[in-house]
Image (cartoon, rainbow, N blue to C red):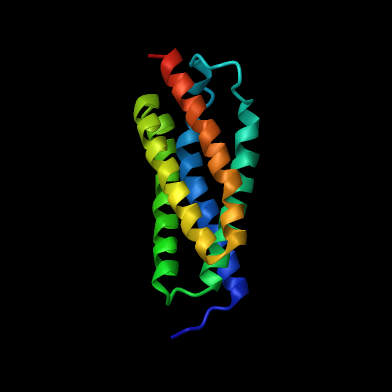
Length: 160
């Protein structure tokens, strides 16, 4: 079996998170100047240019958190389970962009972001049991997703 060094694990962890971000961006970018621009939005909506740097930063923090868990090893069941929850929530993260921007469905995106938020919380709790640092690195992410959920609800409500 090939042994992967920590630097390779870190790079892979960062790239996998950014890669999932690119999937979301693929569906988001075309919808911003057309569909999203024409939606009624609440007063607290951030400018569109803020989302990309915010998400890039969050994906970096998530990648480091993932690396810290992976560094502990995957032989223990609790580490494997934490890894699994991380990838489930990461997949749901991309799915939100597909639902909201790709399918132009704030309603289904709202339902999905609630499920995503719960899975992020479970992931954070599992990460904290393995590495306090990795758990703390996920806090900005759940904070942003909380805000995104409120924004999603507001957009749904204003445009129904």
